[in-house]
Amino acid sequence: MSEKKMNSSRRGHLKSLMLAIAKDLLEKEAADLITEKAAFIAENCPAPVLSGGLPELQEMLKKLAQTIDKVDEDRYDAEAKVKKTDKEIEDLKMKVVEIQGIKKPALKKVRMSADAMLAALLGTKHKASMDFRANLKEVKKEVKEEAADAVGDWRKNVDEQAGMDGRKKKFQG
Image (tube, rainbow, N blue to C red):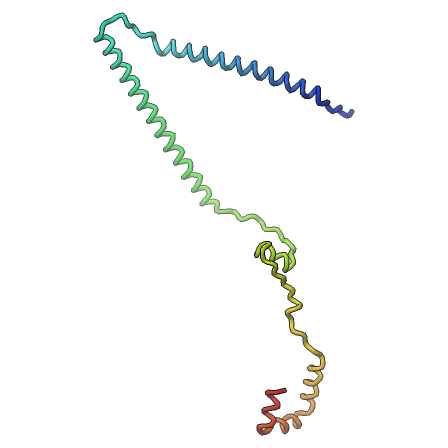
């Protein structure tokens, strides 16, 4: 059985329903958060008694200042512990990397022409062409035949090269 595709109007309707449900859930969550906050404050922060005179208010303010100092010290200690632990974790991660070593990925064999390699190395700005066969010297077969004749009659070659005339021919020819 093939499933039918949903048309755009149905998809839009379902999307709007999901968004409405999500909006209601977010509003409920925000209201729950407000009630939790009010309950926490009522439990941990009793209402101040302002019926006394000035010395009682000053005493209450001193107690509040001491409580604030204690909370700040606890917060600072907790932050210091977290930073120390984070640093230890980073050090341990570095040690693990050092112990394992950096693994090199297996390289794939790529077939490239010389022109493609030059283009990759030099970039697209340089239009260098590397035709290796064009740079090779051509060897003529006639030269090889002359060398074969030279080997055949060595006495004639020795007589020709004797004296200054023979040495000049050797360097000119």
